Image 1 (cartoon, rainbow, N blue to C red):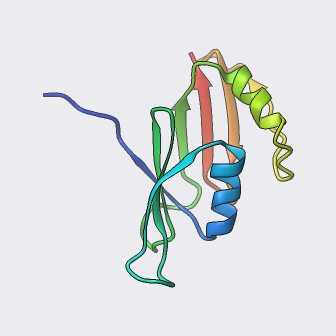
Image 2 (cartoon, rainbow, N blue to C red):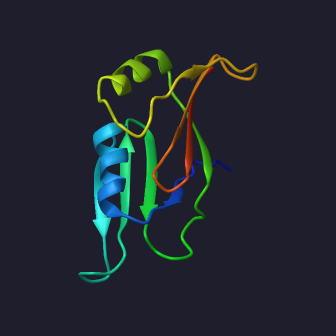
Length: 119
């Protein structure tokens, strides 16, 4: 028996803010988008390297305020990249907790927390 990577579904409430944060700021790309019809809630898959996330405007898909941990092999490099983007809503710093080499904690516009970590 073998398990594969789990895909997290994060609840979002505004497509424009989602794209500004996840695509423009964090550097993810949109893999695909789905709506049952025009004007209906958005469900989309985004990815950056091997990290895959689903973002959903659908009621009941995910809970606002979810915490997820994403392993990264160069937190300091990613931090430098983020700092060049001048995202006006965040100015993240790097932490050195006892359970990881480094952590970079970010909150999306909907209260979800993304904790990028390096071991």
